Image 1: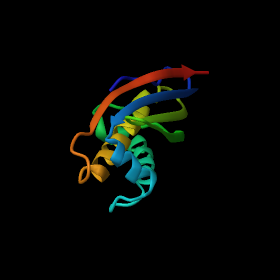
Image 2: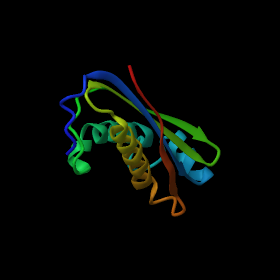
Image 3: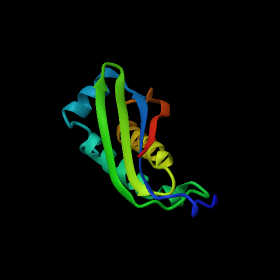
Image 4: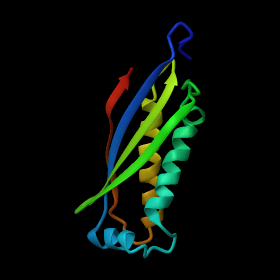
Length: 134
């Protein structure tokens, strides 16, 4: 693990995005809360938040970071859902891995909840779009 003890604690924020391609009929079921497993976006939001909080247990050598913010947002589009995760902390190292983990697990949760009705789903374009420190 990298030694960050010599670095100052700073406010740090990261934003990651990802996309899950879904059939139009699946998107309609999500909008109507018509899937047997329940409210897909509510469950995916909680999964993303939990994932961000557990990143240090999932990714080897990742620092344990006290998160002050994790926000998961969804943008329903014609061909799927864009997922955005924003993470924030005051720490000696950044929170980009937490944002990326949150997006990934939110997408996997959507996949899991919709797999019975959509065999063509694709998770794609998971990436970091910003990383800042103040």
